[in-house]
Length: 553
Image (cartoon, rainbow, N blue to C red; front, top):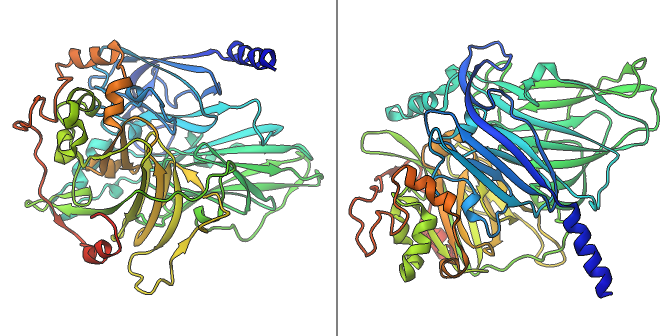
């Protein structure tokens, strides 16, 4: 038996490989083939869209990056947990320093998870400018084998830059809007109206991977007269769940299996519909529908349906394939997802009325160099809204969206169980839905949609050492301060984590301090640290009721 185990281990090592991507991050002026003005975007090797990255579980992904921009950049492998490699998570001034203009940097980590992910820029919201692409990690032993695969990566392309958008949004009184420069939809890098056909062979099973690289809107996917079976959500395998339509929020990923029909007598259509659920309706933009053909035979006619299904994604009805019972929380945190206004009437996006600002020292270095002070959240600066949690502590988060805005909330380094939803103005409990307390394996994912006027409760076990972001994945919201940090096990980090010299070197290039608290000091001295902006609430929630219910406010 020992020989067999050793042989299998060595076989696995032999199959693992280096997957090397050489990316020169460059400006690209383009309109992406759309009927709108060209703008300066950000691509790789002078091209947009970026190449899709494909690998197998166990492979080592090597991203050799050259920064040819005139500003800093960084890359985040969205959904990859970076267990033991927190310094490669790619968030500037959190996991290290950004990549300086004119310099090189290499991300290198083992892909320990299979599934559907994506890579995007995490400096200055460069995701908005096109720096984004799917990352697919295959598993030869996938319990859901398919005969063939298709990928749909959907993104919006705006004719103005992220900085121009933020300047409009920060006009006093919240009177500016980027919607006067509406976007268009890209599917697999091309204008949505140029959708390509899917070719189905009778009797085969197809896996269709859906990746939402949107900056803002929701979208849905459906195939006429075909049932979709959800088998993966955000990289986590699920028990098969039959649905007619899949709704996606920004940053989310879903895989579905589709069984082809046995007959070639008819062709069908698939539909990608961009919704106006929480955005300004613009004819032809929100909502917008893009139809493609599902071809069984070039000689067959296409069966056209009159009604296209549409419904929210039901997180609470889907179970993770690997059984994990409902977690019981050691600590509950209330997170008010709202916006506030400065004394000058300038709007900001906030969590609990704290609008995030970077510290002078990357948070990972503050955790590693401040000794016992690393367990004090103040060490990381009040403007980072940091929560320090113990290793393996179970944290419950109540996301509360009392405004007319929705928020796709993404947690780095972890997946969370989705356990409860309801409406924020519900005083009777009529809208409350919750997973069963036993005999059910709650869906685990890394990005959950919190609709406007609703709340969502999630729980996660903080079992991954490091400093991790929690933020809204609408680019505008993140750019306006919608972010906070979790520091998991700072004592254990100090004992076991060693940051590569290449990470420290990027800080040295830019004269960024790599030790001390948020202000770069070794004592309880915070002079020079970024100020916490004072904000007044737009819609204050009933905090007293939440405190009475046991949530930490």
